[in-house]
Image (tube, rainbow, N blue to C red):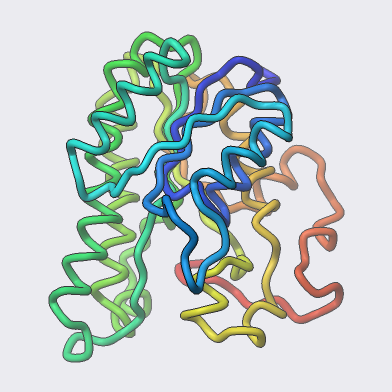
Length: 273
């Protein structure tokens, strides 16, 4: 596989950031992109809605379907999957991108936030995978890509923010388990994680603002790496925990400077790498 033309991607959290960037990259091939996200109306602090993302997808050459989806809701997931199948005839690729973050220690993490992170990250990933698998089984080159880190059971990743780490590693455990469960069926389950901080609204608003953005790479490094993975034969590429720049270097990409938010700035490593 060397193109996503005609493929249908179901991407959670695709109204902005990395999810939207993955959709735009696929759209340039002529893919169908289901934008499954919560933001139906403009947000006071976050740019973009499912509708503006759909417009960008179509301008880039793809077909779009905007669906209001809170991944905590099984009913909304099911309705969006059914709408996607009705409009595009099936689902070829699922990208579990929707995520919640709070980098606090044990006594500083309200249970409401603990629940939110686990419901969106781990449970949402499981629920979306469960809903899409029946259609992925019918696809020619089915892929599931979770935006989650390599599984590495070291204390240093847990101690500063155990609730968040558990929620993100839960997404990665879905990769580990489902890759084995569906290997014989030919559905690929892989994870992708950035080497550095990525310039997104979450970074701007929650993780240090302009100073952190300065040391970030753009979402396009993740979308280009995702494209490489999603165009591989699914039976030959499953159960992997990929890092974005490793994926690109393996394809011969040597100029990673183009992905820097601020050329020449010192890059800030991401968590878990």
